[in-house]
Amino acid sequence: MEKGYTCQICSLAAPGSHFSVISCRACAAFFRRTAFLKISYVCQGTQQCDVTKKKRFSCRSCRYQKCWDLGMRPSMIKQLVEDEQEQKPTTNLRSEISTPPSSSSQHTDPEQIPESDDAEPATGPSIDGGLVPASVIKDMLEQQQQVKDKVEGMFATMNPISKLAVPIRLSIMQRGLLLFNEHLQKWPLCTPEKVRPGEPFTIAEIIGNHRQELENVSVFCMGFEDFARLEQDQKWVLFKRFWNHFTALERHRTAVHCFKDPPVTRMLLYNGTYYDFEDQRHWTRRSSNLKKIIDFASPMIKKELNQVVGLLRRTAPTDFELVFCMLHILWNTANVSKLTETTIKMAEDVRKRLSTEIHEYYTTEMHHPNYAGRLMKVMKLVAAFNEAEHQRGECRTALRTFEFLPSEYMNTDFVDE
Image (cartoon, rainbow, N blue to C red; front, side, top):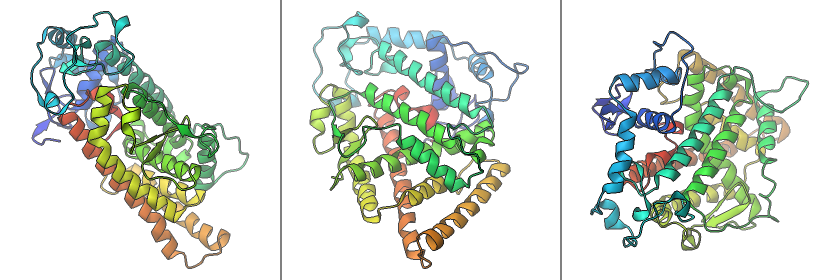
């Protein structure tokens, strides 16, 4: 992210101006979503809530009003759409690296838009000069708002959310194992007998899968009493750093179990379908923009798969070790800004309990008193996934910089950048 600007709305770092106001991408996306969908919010306070920095999630009504007070207007979004309708084809970075331009015929009726989330530039209006039809952007915004509202609803409570009915108090690792098993039970098609090659799909379907991940990882987090007791803004800080790690660990580990000799180029989805990055032409053929995105991101994805799948195969972590890695990542507060002293102290306490439980697991259950070497191998998984997430962040930045897809597709409310 470029330095030197401060968001006039939330006071965090900003790359520049959006809708005529110096603002971060998250606040710009919040305004666009709220105005485009005509969402109404009600302030629970005195309509003077602090919405800067860690308080920016506390009141959406005051946050939107601040956007308005600073000069953002819904008409600016409408104008962007109208400008795109009138815009003549121009040469830009996308055209320099994309496939040849499409036919000049246009689909002005939304019902006539092809079954694709990202039809060619001539298919109709789009937002911010992007290639995606406005009707599809609106659908994406609605989906993102729905999942954000659902996660915020869960994070608003300070009581654990879980279907677990256990009459005794569980340790953090015992609860983690039960919650992890509860999560796995939701995906009955992810077994060696039922996995199958996936059909060609679109960006919208990929985003839908990501939002399914977000909802399920938030359920996992809220199953822990320690996490549930955090303030809502603190939950968001930890969650944004964690959900991608959880999903990658769980999906790659499941792939290792499903394939006898798992190729390091396959990605397994929750519905039991897998996609091979050595054969990406097959499953990206429904969407030219998806093909461009995958072609661009493929080296990074293959590198991640090669590193982490190979390491998972060699390490073969038990469920206990895998959940330990997940919770270590969730509660690792090193180099994390925006955390309160209360959260940091709680995280230290949780990590101490995790250390005690992993020690007891190796010495008592596994009868392995000299477990230092084994623990080092397990912790290499954590390092590998941290590196993979760093690479994903760089890829997201590049996708935005080169305008491969609109910010609405990037889950900006769910990543910490």
